[in-house]
Image 1 (cartoon, rainbow, N blue to C red):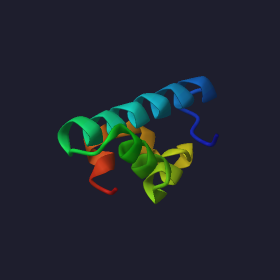
Image 2: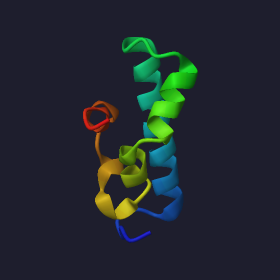
Image 3: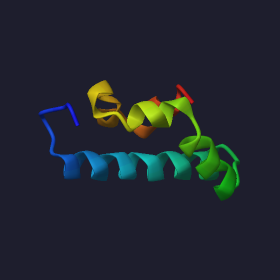
Length: 69
């Protein structure tokens, strides 16, 4: 963890919340099945970047992050 503005626990919470929101958007609005949405998010390069606090991506909205998916 290299972002001094948030604790490790806060970062994990925000990442998990964003991930769940992104999956929900893909399933509810984009027509993906739940399994497809989960796979799409967790196997994407964007999720890898989201998992790195130094990118600051965890501070963005789920829709903004999905625009890079």
